[in-house]
Image (cartoon, one colour):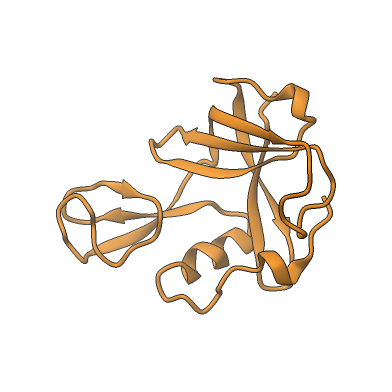
Amino acid sequence: MSTDVGAVLPNLEDPQAAPFWKAARHGQLTMQRCLVCNDLRWTPQDTCPSCLSRDYEWEVLSGKGKIYSYCIYYRVLNPAFTDVPYTVVMVELDEGPVIIGRLLNEPAEAAIDERVVCAFTAISDEAALVNFTLDK
């Protein structure tokens, strides 16, 4: 995967998302779980969208799920990703939330309901992107 680090580096100082990026750099997929209503949420937020509680904890997830939808990019739309074609997938995690990432397999291998697992791609000493590979 060819990437321009400056173009895709997340804001590691964002107080809501920093724990997510730190965990990803250590090979763990995490999300916030509300301590009041028990909802698991993505994207990171300071307030639960279901019950408005501000009490939550970070939970380590399995990183497994299935492809809910996907798109194959045949031309360069972002200078950080020049190795076309590549596939971006929406993954419904086994725990429920849907997250978007890149499928590291060949584009022709993407299919709705195909099982996938997280694959973390380091883009700097401090950050890793959450991508997916087929779970075979």
